[in-house]
Image 1 (cartoon, each protein chain N blue to C red):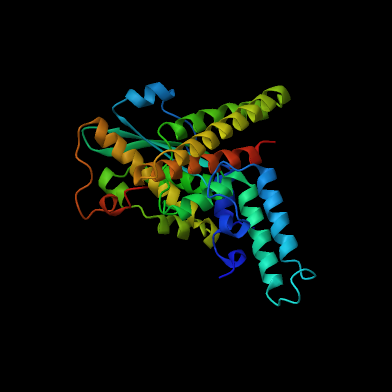
Image 2: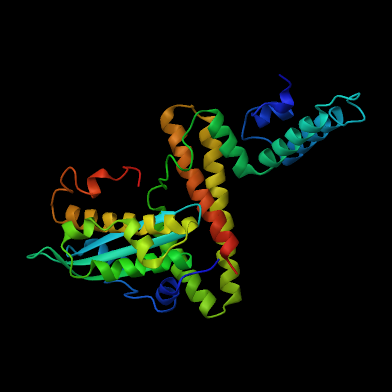
Amino acid sequence: MNPAVTANPFQTLGVPESMDLSTEQVESAALAMSVRFHPDAAGGDTNSEAMLAGVNHALGVLRNPETRAIALLELRGGPSASQDRTLPDGFLADMMEARERIEESVNADNRAEIERWKAWARARRAVHEGRVAELFRASGDAGSLRCIRHELNAWRYIERLIEQLP
Amino acid sequence: MAYGPKIIDHYENPRNVGSFGTQSEIKTRKDVGVGLVGAPECGDVMQLQIKVNDSTGVIEDARFKCFGCGSAIASSSLATEWLKGKSLDDAERIKNTQIVEELSLPPVKIHCSVLAEDAIHAAINDYRAKNGLSPAAPGSAAASIAPSR
């Protein structure tokens, strides 16, 4: 089977199955693949359009670190978001407190304070992203795959918080 | 999205918002059970507190705080109304489908009612754990929910 039509986005772009990919690395791999499958270069290959669609899809998945992590966890056989909704210990209590204080800042229209919360949320996202990358580098046992899912759940939560901040 | 009148009513006039003390107080108060649940895919966080009469086992009062969409707020607001005056065993039998029906929640918002049901069970379990009571008997509603919730 041609690599571009497999369900594995890492194979599709010919990059290592790893969290440790730069945006540039993913984009240049996608560019090389799309040149290869461009209808003008593919010599009338009727599949070239499907190949290109596959490359574009893989690019979308792997360029974003969160969807890259989700794809990698799925490949390693880890739990999906609906299979394991657990959040790391203490996470919800932190979020409840943060949400309360954010609401106070918003009600007081304290822009400086809201900006501080945005910076806080971005730093928090970086923490979860870092933990996910670290866990993928370590052993791939079932326990660590579950931990990755919990960190990903927290990461998703923080992304939603960032979207919702005014 | 078109919200039904009951959701809008609970959203605009949420019942029993608040807390029976600071976070550290409610953690140690033995007459208060606290359930804290969240939904990563929405960014919702919901805290439900029940104040239980320890001689009768009846929920005398309830409070909630919810950061989330209108349906999540309405579901938890309604839950506090329903919890008051119920025994722990009866409270445990509240099903998310009853909340869906009462509020006419649209299908895409059913998970908000599930969150409220999870919060009820978490609050009851917290009260029981604080008071050395055994969790729900096998076959009861709380014993049959998924462990990851």
